[in-house]
Length: 234
Image (tube, rainbow, N blue to C red; front, side, top):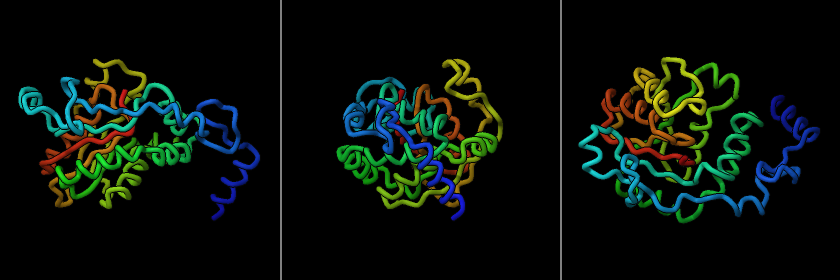
């Protein structure tokens, strides 16, 4: 209760401004800026980048590269407005309010696609990419967990913390493709809690090194079906 009162007082004295135009107080994303969100319309294979329904990975891509993920479904392009809102939530506000607003703006078409995907995958639960303890203390929340909770409400699925980060790594946004790939080994450990099929949620996917490492940990724990969902794709 005390935290809620202090949060309300802070917002009253220092009101949030639109993450996009930085001009309109009291809103996270104004109506004008929300119309500029770039929706990720054509889902693609995570490996070869060719178009594929619902982001399902082509079978040859999975087999030839020994990939655990069955596919990755994304909602917005990271470039532009969605990325700006996400960065504001993580680094500027240190508050999930901006993230809540971005999740609220998930298009109906993508919500329908998520239901279609669930009929195909039959996932039992949703899990997410964890933060290190230091990062979570500094930020105050885990953005991937927050997104997972929103998706869990849409799909009526439980959200479980199955993955734990065991090694500290540099901020992935500051690394190039080669460096990200090198940091993924032995990054996570996981438990299955008796589950066989899950969605793995992250805020943004770039090279996919982090999601692949977490998927490998889940697979090692005994989960056989792992499908990625990201709010943004870079």
